[in-house]
Amino acid sequence: MEDLNIVVRERLEKAAELERANVALYPNGFSVPDRIKDLLAHAGDKKAEELEAEEKTYTIAGRVLSVRSFGKSTFMHLCDSDAKIQVYVQKNLVGDETYSIVKRVDIGDIIRVVGPLFRTKTDELTLAVKEFVLLTKNLRPLPEKFHGLKDIEMRYRQRYVDLMVNEQVRETFRKRARIVSGIRRFFTERDFLEVETPMMHPIAGGATAKPFTTHHNALDMDLYLRIAPELYLKRLLVGGFERVFELNRNFRNEGVSTQHNPEFTMLEFYQAYATYEDLMELTEELFVRLCREVNEGKTSLEYQGSVIDLSAPWARYTFIESLTAIGNVPQEAVESREGAVSYARSLGIGVEKFEGHGKLLTKIFDLVVEPRLVQPTFIYQYPLEVSPLSRKSDAAPEFVDRFELFIASREMANAFSELNDPRDQRERFERQIAAFEAGDEEAHQMDEDYIRALEYGMPPAGGEGIGIDRLVMLLTDSPSIRDVILFPHMRPEKKG
Image 1 (cartoon, rainbow, N blue to C red):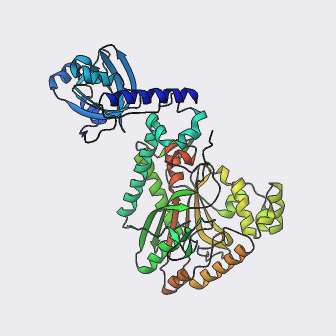
Image 2 (cartoon, one colour):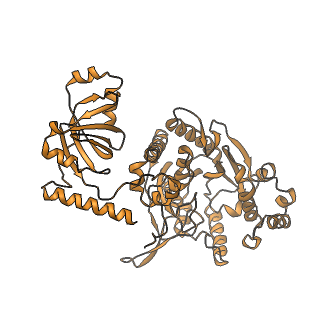
């Protein structure tokens, strides 16, 4: 820390020297018509003689990443948001006054330079500086080994520095942007309407989760930050929009892990006259297309050492089948509450938290099946008691028409054939209220207006939610959700 303070003081002194020489440290109004990537593309494989014959100048700007001075000449590497290039400044070309500024340039400064392109003796493409302007003076040095594992918390906390020095990190967020754009194209091409629904709800609904609460002063009412947009999107189905989607920010007052952030991004979409089985095929199409778009046309990728093949069709198991066929759960645990309790205790599960057989089996699934679902796998027909918004299966009413998609041992998507019977929905809400009164903080609340909407008539429909952050993790080989969120939530920084 003392070394850092010394460097900062030195830079402050250097800044003061420049200001005494009437050099503006943070000027404005300088246009930058050229991008470094365009210069690199233009130069391509052109020989030195071809570049010299062009007699054309370029104007670029960026952050200084390296400085090497040799008396009356200086080499620098300059980086903008896309690429890096070398620049060469000679005292006899820019003059004594400007070169005195060049000599005070530090790594991290932002500069604007104008000049032609040439190649050095080592054939490196370089811009010969004819005009030089300091645009932003850096007062804090860039870390030399910022990418090291020991600095990982610093990288998340100071993402602005992480982006400066780690091209791989910048590329991750470029890919994220392409993935989100690709999702929009995919759904608009299929006649889905992109919509926006409220982020502050009078009733916490659309999922089972503990919400964040806030208070609206003018209305004098408590509100909940959105845990899911589901009930509002289904109101739009009632209103006559038959295909809708929303890329939405959700907030859940839960733990933080490599897979969970209290604020996260979801895609939710709803299609009238479709079933959860139709959405399985749609989901396969979406994932394959996105993988090809960010993975050079390939449908397989490597994620944390495992090769994952996204080629359709994907494996499909019922929830019950997966317990025995994948998790090797004893048949008696699947068939009876007593057997499930005994098996759960052998796994160290506190069974008192799970009153129903279905909830207990779901917890067993989380522990023994989910870790084994590396390749894309649909698990469908979940227990009714863990699916308060999903339609009952006609063939087996104790289960619902629902699937979850798992890839790389984690849930990636959750989809239903939607419940549109208002009488059944009211009964489900009432059971959730009873669970909440019994201590379940994540139980769903009663939503009378949503039931009223269903009473007007919602067409049969399928709906799905896909975690954008986890999808980006998969497609960018990122081990933690914090790697794909620009500013993840963290504990307060320790002082002193």
